[in-house]
Length: 292
Image 1 (cartoon, rainbow, N blue to C red):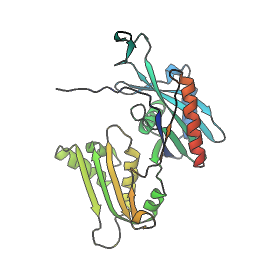
Image 2: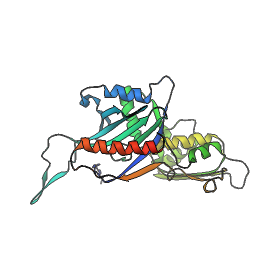
Image 3: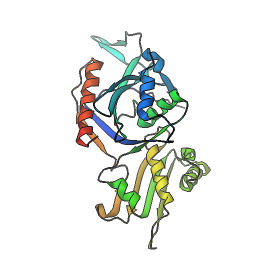
Image 4: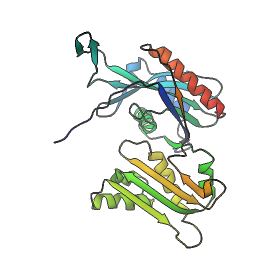
C-alpha cells in the first residue's frame, strides 16, 4: 500500500531564519538582485507563479528595497489540495473560500555582502526551491546557495588540512546529480543503487598517517552544503576533523555550525501584510546585527 503524506502549512510563533552566501555560477549571469527584480516586474502576480513539482506551486509575492544594497521580499507557496476545514459550533465543515491558500516566507538579500537571509521553513519553501524558482523563470541555473557557518568554521575548514570526514546521507542515489568530477559523490550514489540502501554513511580518514585528505574533498563538502536543503537528498550528518585546532580541537559539525537565529513572533491572526512586515523587521534586525 502506498500512502502519500500531503504537506500542510501551519504558522508557528517560533520562527527561525538561516543565512547563505549567494554566488553566481558564471560572471556573465545576471546578479541575484537583477533576477529578482525581473520577476517582480511581471504583472499581475499570478504570472509569476511557477510549478516546481507536483502540488508545489510558488510565486514571488513582494519585492522591495530595504536600505542601501538590500532588498527584501516574500515568497508564497500555493495550496490547492488537502484544504483544512473550518471549525464550527457542532464540528468541522469544508472551508468556504474558493480561492487557494497561501503559505509564505520572507527573505532579505544584501548585494554588497552577497548574503541571503531567509525564513527557515522547508515545508513551505526551502532555499534550494528558491533557487529552482528563479531558474524556472530564467531557463537556467544561475546561483548556488552556501550555508554560512558559525564561529568561522567554514574558513577553518577551507584553510586547514582535513584529517577526517564522515557523511551520512538519505536519498543517496540522488548524489549522482552532483558534478561528475567528485569521486566521493559518485561512489556513495553507486553504493546506494547497488545495494538498494536508502541511507549511506561513509568515513574518509588519514588514520595514523601524516598529512591530510586531498584538497578535492573540500569541493565535495561544498557541493554537499549546497544540497543540504533539497527535498530529494537529506544530509543527516556531516562532520570533519581539521588540523586547525584553534576551536573545538579542530572538530567541525557542518549541520550544527550552520548559522541560524530563532525568534518568538506574535503573528496577527489573519492579516498577511502585517505578518510580512513583522517578519521583515525581525530579519532586518538579525542581519544588521551580523553587519549584513
